Image 1 (cartoon, rainbow, N blue to C red):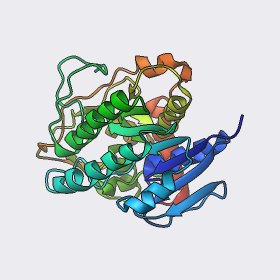
Image 2 (image 1 turned 135 degrees about the horizontal axis):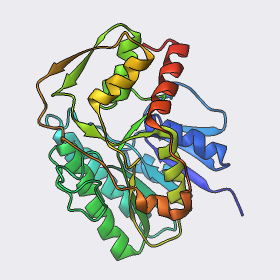
Image 3 (image 1 turned 180 degrees about the vertical axis):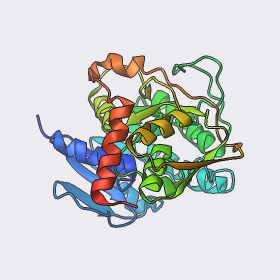
Length: 306
């Protein structure tokens, strides 16, 4: 069997760069597509610089690919209520064009959605994939709009499109300054001797999952041959921000933080049911949160990342 060709749109990002590395580890022919040169280059990966929003560039990049991971977003949960027109007018429209470009091909597309924002406030936890999505910010709603459009293409064209609703990934390569990554912020600010801002009372609960586990699940979807199209990518365990602070304090007593008024864009509690993805045969023992945080702390301390 010939090597599978995998393209990652948004390959310079946190998930994209780690996914590219792990796909290369599994002998995929990997291409990483983004607007700029990556901070670090892996000789096993073909880096393509170009504009996702240029139709001619995009159509050329996707040609001949077996698997496409769409991991690009120009907005984040924190800024989407101000920059929502970028999400609807650019991300959504161009992604619809991407769907149209591949609808009559054998290319499998996996769209990286947001399990942390698409569902919104839910009473029943952990949240299953068939729960009614009720996003409370524009970031989640843009993702949901893309999901719904993907479903229509998938039904009408019988294409190979899938949705991965990812909870809250963390690990080396994340950058909290881009609007997401509480664990990343706590560790980096602690190492820099800075104070962490906690929006609310610290009892916001999220489903944190180590980046290597996320990527293993995403690669599992590339190899999945069943009929399901929507999967939660998560640990299935909820952890409060106060608990994260406790764990880091157990590693480094220099943790400093202050509580700020809660933000309207933040859902109080999100825990995703991961039984569907775990039932596909990924057969993965997920990294325990305490061990994952220790790994990230050691990584940043060793590399003196501020």
